[in-house]
Image 1: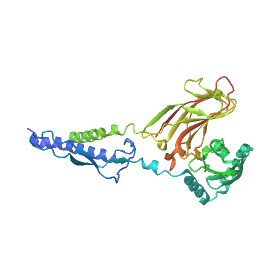
Image 2: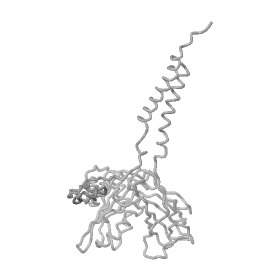
Image 3: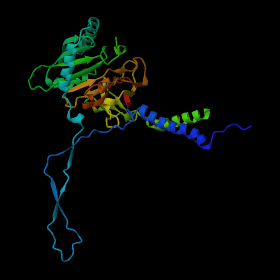
Image 4: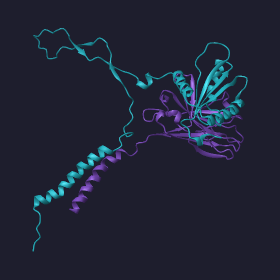
Length: 211
Length: 168
């Protein structure tokens, strides 16, 4: 009694077909589901543009195999491709002024709704902290808190004092331990100088508030 | 038929596996020693008593601004994890660390929320300040700084910044 065995071609097909299908499926799956984001080596974006410069011409040496009886032609002129100018990456060229960015943040703050409870607690904490900072060269004029942001108006003795001390304000330990922004646009006018510091808690966890 | 199924699955896994190593190690990181400038007018405030560290010898709190290298491998606006190793040599003060930015046009500053060491312990600790200030829209234009507040020296050993680690 011999069992019916499949023929050789059938057996080969039975073995190879799954393997081929498996390989194809694997390659497809890998290329479809592989997380390529982040695996690419970040490259500096360089935009290249040809300049509108006149073409560059260069003299080409005459052929060296010119026979003795052949008159040397005047140097042939060939056109070289226009040089390429590499721009800086767009992010470096299209940088938005700090003043514009700060104005936008302040505008967004002004447009946000007021959360009465958060606003009260934040304002009280800020006044308490900033009062300790007030001295002859700077003082807090106003604190306005809304839902997750506060605008603090500060008067410096002069623009020079603002330049010297603005960095200190963004690092001052505060109960409202959130991101702080300040800009001090140039000002030639002598006398007191006012700047607005924005305190932004939208990105910070409530647990980071130190009260 | 069963063996065919195993062969099929084996090739499926093997083929998929070929592409997996390229996913490994997708994150970049940078390590920097404490290349910091102490915001002080007195040279005697500086201390390097811990090799490579920036310490505060002054009897007042000082801010140390430490450079964070930002380049095409790891731009600061892609850093989502920041670790700052500090030594708090006081049992009454605190060391804090913040991810800050100096405005590229020189007229402003931004600092994220601060992380602090404990009040009552002399300790060497890693602080993990928020990097949200670095990753915010437009932050890529500005210059990253890790700002560390070092309390006044109370013993012979100063509080110090030891080094910085950042990754995406």
